[in-house]
Image (cartoon, rainbow over all chains, first blue to last red; front, top):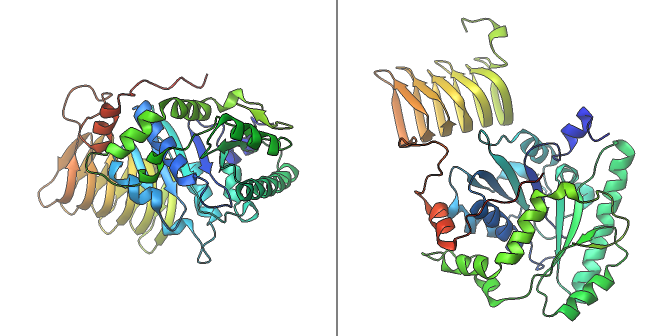
Length: 256
Length: 140
């Protein structure tokens, strides 16, 4: 029943654009770095698209850094209205924003959320209005344990959604980050093998990541970051634009 | 308000103050009160006592009251003699009457094809510099 009016209202999948979030309860796994790579990747690879980066992290790392690129087709948002006084996401305002956000005439609109550590799916019903949840993780035990727990929390949220509404749920794509070797990547894949989700291409560690958020006068650091990861960014942005090609309900871990 | 209610898809009366709104209106909106938030509307009318603060986008607008923050229009912007606009203003075409006030960053396309992306800012310079200007594969 994905074509029902309810489905059209409650998922972004029917719209021309896409809404993605980078989320994990664990900090330091690369959410902001990947949100930067996705949003700038989309904006630079497709000049006819509108891209909006929404930073839900009160530290505002990605929004502070990327606002220098803002223009008529690239917007950066870090708005108190998207939070409750408790610091939890203001689901109503975020959902309204996702559902009402128009693209410029003839453009595709991409919304990219960066989220803070500590995100609790049970308190983040707006996640259900995203097309895809990218879950970055490194290969350390601490990150793997936290990621498994986060994926389970997402599944609980999805089960409630399936019960209450007969519509599609967001895709979940695990993004292996800070990977040193193929062997390490395989180890991570094995550790998450029973998770009903997709696992993306590995992003190998580079010292360039350390400088990603500096506002250099000539943007040389960000340029080097995007250039050196061009193949990965191409894969990441294409994955977002071609989500419909993926089975919405994977039963185990699938490699993309 | 001289016109009938049915002329507008959305109307904010003089005694109304609406804050924190995020509205998408497929039609005409008339604001005689105050609205703060994000408004996407085809045609916007801000009445003589009306105030709109926030990010406004749409096709055309007629301003007799006050607009602050950002106003992005693809078509005609009409600013009447009592109209006040302060902030970032982008328009397709412009008509202002004597007495109108526009303060801030005001811009429009500088001739040529409107579908050409404007290479005038940091993102466009950055896009050119990294040389990955290929279009993404379409989703279909």
